[in-house]
Image 1 (cartoon, rainbow, N blue to C red):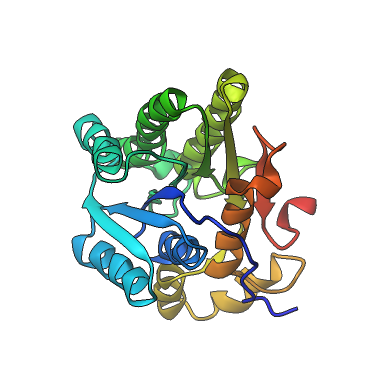
Image 2: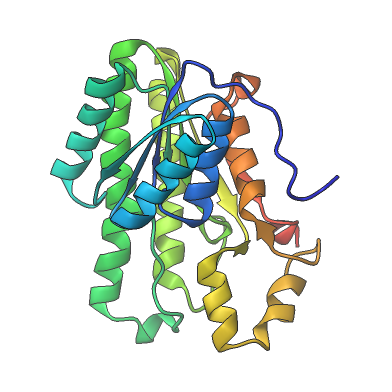
Length: 259
């Protein structure tokens, strides 16, 4: 099977919110939802990239809207969810993908400002999104949320202590929200990718091309993931095919956490 194959899901009539949708995994996820018939709202701080993602969906015959949002800011997140509901009447699925990494350094060399930046986006941002998404889904009688965690949220990550701490927090938020809201018809899961072939990775490997082979070898499958493969996992978790799955951390990691 081709590693780029897109599986068939139908989200006709569904309204989906994707944060961090201006590029990378977020863009691939937004495009996949659009191709599956969803109305997609893309949120990001990168305005040009967010509009471009929305435009790509529209060009393919779908419906999409871009809303600028800094997920670390409570007013922005509240306004984002209000905009989704005011425009489309509901919110069926949300993907809390917005996140950042810090410079790779040993824990003792990481500074406080880097800690605060990562926690503000990766943890506070997911908490704020969950808070307002859950309230809306509770009002309408159900929904599905997928949070972007990482294999760094399932184990240690040398030279990425703060990032790992933030993704462990995402896993904790996911499990807790899933348990609290299951009886209200709201499912909450997370996806935990290994290394993914994004523009960010490409830039890093341009600086250190000798790392490319090593990055591939750490995964038992012998390569990194494509963004479409992570998007496929997100769509499955969001779909009715995963109707009995909640509180789960789905590793999309080429076997990395198996060793």
